[in-house]
Image (cartoon, rainbow over all chains, first blue to last red; front, side, top):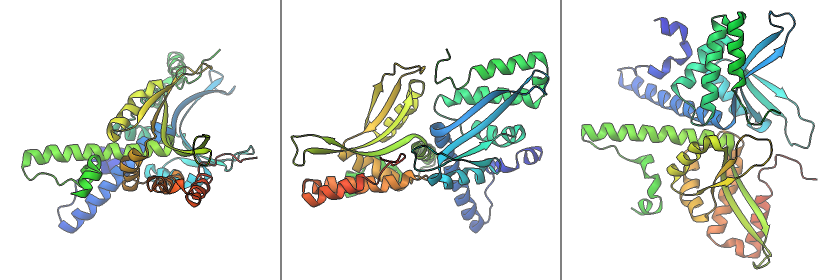
Length: 178
Length: 178
């Protein structure tokens, strides 16, 4: 019952299909469709998704900086529908327009989840259940550690803050830092 | 029986699970695992895959140019395992190393299917069965038309050649052409 309260949107993973034949058929179809979408989302994230932990200046905070974790998927305007499908699936996060004024044909949209509570309740349990298959899995595992520290408010202590900075430094290193 | 000969590697989509309980369980697991990978591949392609039809100069051909269709997924070296998984799934195509000498941390690998026969037999039926959910679906449908023309050798005629050029012009227009 506790799990039902904590992860209400993820319950279908282990949903027992109803015993009544008609409902059973509907339930199985629905379950199958959700599983298909879940695996598709993992693939899409492996291709285009990103787990980031940014450290931004904020003089009002204890350490003069703020940790900013985010799960993002970016797409061109023509594929906005796919982002809406993901947002509907997770039932959290927002879609933000990034206008482009260069020689590209379309503006960009970003699906992003920034709330630590949503990340912990919806995004992380999902990718625990449907793990990524590329090197992004490593980023995810680091990201998960950062969120755990933040949920326990440990990042407000000096040692917790150092831990988070160290973890953030391990992520998304596609380019060398000079 | 004809379908069995034409699409031997895709038969599992409609495979009947064996009646024997033990085999049934194994078959169902295997089927489920394959379905999960199939949906993951569609998601991954939506994120990172590409259907292209290039037109390259080749003075030895009738029209002085050659059509070059390709299905590609590119990944950094750290995610080579994911490309191998896809290659194993489709049982066709090759993985090519693209060395990088800029400030990136890793070389790139491209999984590509260039054979018109493989595209027709393995790639196209797969994406018919597990359709893309982004705007890449439109590219795929155009790509499919090009492959159909090429398989019938219609691109060797003047009208067929024009058709292919027109179709190729519709694809992958992320940037404006000046």
